[in-house]
Image 1 (cartoon, one colour):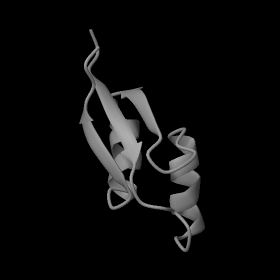
Image 2 (cartoon, one colour; image 1 turned 120 degrees about the horizontal axis):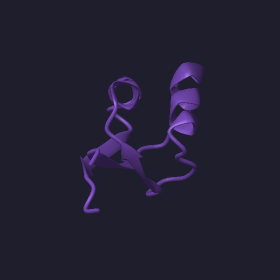
Image 3 (cartoon, helix red, strand yellow; image 1 turned 90 degrees about the horizontal axis):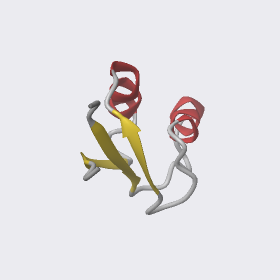
Image 4 (cartoon, one colour; image 1 turned 180 degrees about the horizontal axis):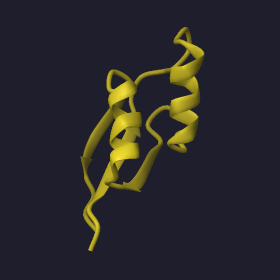
Length: 62
């Protein structure tokens, strides 16, 4: 069974670079305190690392 991560947007992407805004949308996050449960893959980890100052990450309970 693949590991899952719960990613929550905790800071606004307003006044950030366009690439960071695109990464937030690419993860499926739309508004503050919005969470998504995503597979723990290298590509998702890379996206999270790019916007680590905007999100909170924790293991998902599934």
